[in-house]
Image (cartoon, rainbow, N blue to C red):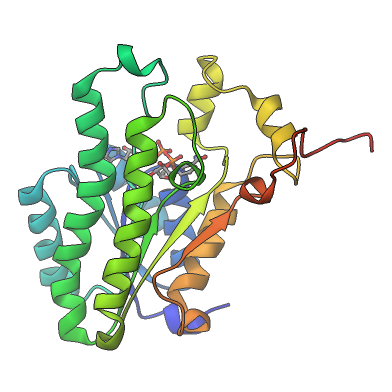
Length: 261
Ligand SMILES: NC(=O)c1ccc[n+]([C@@H]2O[C@H](COP(=O)([O-])OP(=O)(O)OC[C@H]3O[C@@H](n4cnc5c(N)ncnc54)[C@H](O)[C@@H]3O)[C@@H](O)[C@H]2O)c1
């Protein structure tokens, strides 16, 4: 579909599961070489192996600057370039009243999502600036645009990621590096499935609130990643693209989806 992606080296954080894994599979189908970077080493290696022996799985906590720099050095030593970075590593927020929230979790979430995306982008940009070309794809969320009660750290981190996308997109526009973000709506992944299983997310309420009437699939997000990395998006930088089945466009005071209209 996008032959220009074929020679690319694509580094995907959080690539062992969910949206990152779908992105890894999507880029691999285009012929790209994938580096899956994840805090879960065995799953990162296993996921890379399942893609094929030319791909690599590396352990890294994206919140740790030393580990981030080491991983980027390893990729450059092995492959000599990084064409696409997808910042997809993430954890869920604590869903409880703000006055009961735990500061350790608040800080850890910001460290992974916001600071982690920033540090990984900064490290990869050194190489991309030398290449005069590169594409960074951040994963924001509907939570970074509209207010989701209780999810303070998550929403603030995701709004911050969208702003980083704008500032870095403008800084590097003339240098050939495009920086964009995707704001997924509710997508069925191990993360959202565990929230449903624990009773922290009501599947049918989400379906009724989504104009298209259903959760998205990881492939919906992977398809947006491929598009943003491709030459079809050559004049697109600094944007956050909603991929949410219409969720953020709905403002009427009623359910958005009625299966018996
Ligand atoms: N699933 C959704 O509905 C949805 C919606 C909007 C945004 N997102 C965002 O998409 C991203 C991926 O979510 P997902 O649903 O695929 O979750 P997931 O749990 O399936 O995958 C997340 C991956 O990130 C890894 N990870 C966690 N902490 C890490 C760290 N410190 N360093 C490196 N890797 C780490 C995990 O090991 C896991 O493999 C997250 O940023 C999430 O906030 C998801």
